[in-house]
Length: 267
Image 1 (cartoon, rainbow, N blue to C red):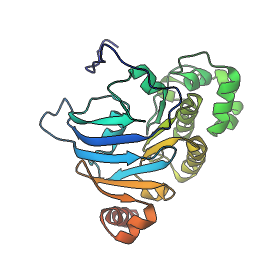
Image 2: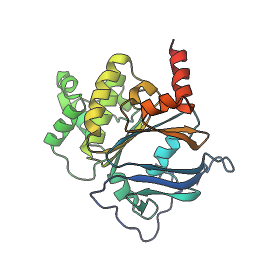
Image 3: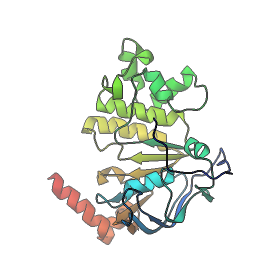
């Protein structure tokens, strides 16, 4: 709690409009982590993510996939180039207004030793009604298991959610994302730690949450992104291919090799 962010906001910033389309543009982005100076993570990276579509970002470990998510949220600033949302450089808008337009569902969500309803409403900067919490829980396929708890929405989930299964924690994280009504949704390997049954439940919840939103999926299991509107395939901090899943398979390039490698590893 004492640690201060190295990120410095401008003295005068503008608010990102409440209603945005959700177009995300990386324009000639160069980036290196402050802890690893001289080691370039993203190299002249340029691409456009279409608004209200599902875009999957794939690649080997270390390709720069999760770094893209961090830069969209402006957890770091780029070294060169710029990241834009609806034409606004993320460095020019207030962090509060930027984060209020974005929700993230990570691979391992952070839950707190508080009630189910408090965990769902966490991070919303306004009063949240019980009706909203219930609606978010239903959308995220977690209403039924919550109602089986003796204290229902008042059930304490334990430190880091120890009283819940992995699948239950992930669905609560989806409910937390849903209640914020984001225009941009970030899914950072949101199903990679789940078994087949839980993956199906979580995937169904995510599909409902994606409707009408710009969704950026960092995917480990490539079979889960077949319905993506576009796939961006990365290697060593650069885009090597982009297109629809079937098109990239047909090209038999870098993405095809990734899929082959994963299929072989699963046999």
